[in-house]
Structure formats: C-alpha cells, structure tokens
Image 1 (cartoon, one colour):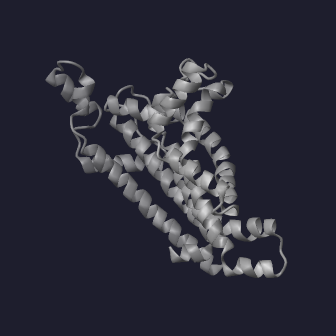
Image 2 (image 1 turned 90 degrees about the vertical axis):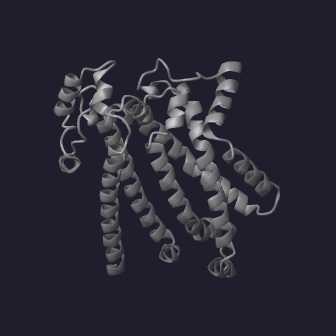
Image 3 (image 1 turned 45 degrees about the vertical axis):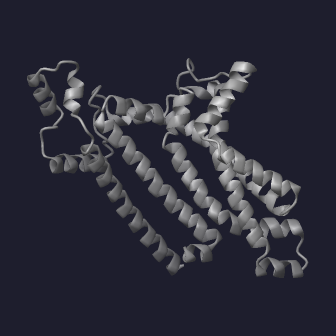
Length: 317
C-alpha cells in the first residue's frame, strides 16, 4: 500500500508540474500572437488616443511578467479574467458553452465503452475468421475517413435525401436534450473514430491475454470460456483502452471544433472559434487552460486505472 501511495504522490506532483507548464505555455503563446488586441477592439480607422485608452483600460501597457503574475493569481482563485470584447467574465463564456459540449461528450462516452469493448471482444473471440476480418476491415475503413467528410456524408444522406434527421442544431439553442434528433448525427460522427481505436486496442489486448500463461493455467483448472474471457483476459485488455478513453474524453471536452462548427452546436468549440475571430485573448487563454487542466486530470485518472488493472504494463511504461 505504501508503494501505491508513493506512486500516487509522485503522479500528483508530476500533474502539478504539467499544470504549471500548461499555464506558462498558454500565456507565452497568446503573447506571441500577431497583431494588437487594442487595435482590433478600436474598430475601423481607430484613433491613436482611443487605442492608447483601450490598452490602458485592459492593462495591455503593463509588462508581460506583471500581467502573468496577476493572471496566475486570478486562476488560483477561480478567476479566468474578463473578455476584452464584451467585458463579461471568461467563466460566463465557459459556462455557456460547457453544457452542449458536456452533453455530446457524455452521450459519446456512454455509447463508446460498450460498443468499442464489445466489438473488440467479438473480434478477438473469432480471431482469424470472417467476423474478425469484417470487424477489423470496417473499423479500419471508418477510421480512415475524416470527421468533417463523414459528417457531410451523414447530412447528405440522412438529413437532405431521406429527411429523417435535422441537418444542424440551428434554432434549438443550448437545450439540445429536449431535441434528441439534433444529437444523432453529431454523436455518430464523434463515435466513429474512437470506437474504431478502442475496438482494435481491445481486440489486440484480448488476443494477447488469451494466449498468456495465466489464462492457460485457468483453463487447465476447468474454468469456462466465458469466465476466462471476461474475468481473466478482459481486465488486462482494458488497460490500454483506458488510456484511449482518457484521450477521447479530453478530445471531446476540448470542444470538438470541427463537429460543433459543422452542426452549428453552441459548445466550447464555437466559443473558442468566436474568441479567436475577435482576438479576445482572455477567453482564448481561459479555454486553453481549461483544456490543458482536463488533459492532466484525465491522464492521471487513466494511469490509476492502468495500474489497477495491469500494474506490470504500467510499470513497464
């Protein structure tokens, strides 16, 4: 138990270091952006005095290290800053876009785990036979299609030609749960590539686990095939899939910019696109920090799951 506590403490310290690196990197990158936010906010044919007043009001005339110190102090108190474009708190933008993005992410993950694991186990159970070849070729083919192209194809077939589903979420606002038909196509697009990745990872892990000595030993003791697969082999196959699941959730909470833009969903991806277009640096910084923190937390969770189910694999990594 002491070894586990020591490992968790080291992993948390590493996570804190990664978080600090994310904050510094985000600030440095936004500082390096071309152009001047004060000029952008001043409008067409800006007056030099107006530009100077905006720079002073937004503290843009202060040295970078002072603004970094104030920004970090605000982050420690949950203050992500104030939008340059509207004067609203950045947390308001995050709250507005978080609901639709979380809904899409939750629906995708709820379907991803059973479908991805189920396809992987099915392919591994029929290794080398027709079912395995069918699952492997289908997942490889679907994975090769970019999300944007796949989304346009789904809109063309199921929305424009057949008329079964709405092509976008325009007119539904942020209450997408009250309009489930508008969620079908975005969720299918979001599922397409992660399901393929997870199915192939689980298949490879299951095949390796089923050929391992401890599974052979379990079979010699007369343990049935289903119990061997789901009790002894599957936990070892889940370990690499946990890492993939963490990366998928991170990708989903990052806003899935392409999917949200394609289906006009007012999530975090749309907020980020608008902030970049308006050169609203505090909003861009706040979203980037949020995405970075999400990545760190999810990776720590995935490492814990990996150590729990396959400690030898984690130690080797």
